[in-house]
Length: 65
Image 1 (cartoon, rainbow, N blue to C red):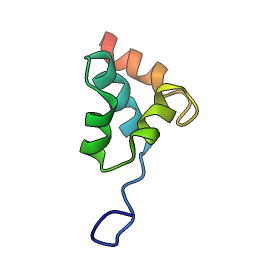
Image 2 (image 1 turned 135 degrees about the vertical axis):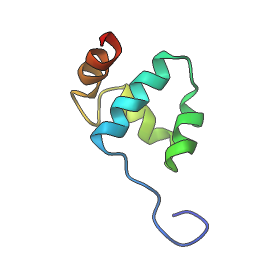
Image 3 (image 1 turned 45 degrees about the vertical axis):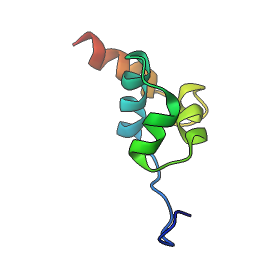
Image 4 (image 1 turned 120 degrees about the horizontal axis):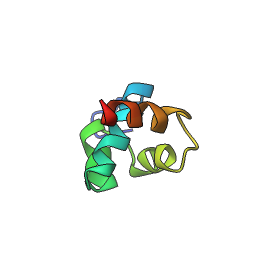
């Protein structure tokens, strides 16, 4: 939980796609996590393909477009 007593944000599939794009642009995982108000471990789960499987492929499509 964050300081105001509300649970932090949970990453959606489209957020995971954005994580990949931002990661490939050289942004640090902790900065990506902070912008989504999540623990950096959630970003790492995406980048290790433990969460939101398929988001990497979707990000590759968007990057190629």
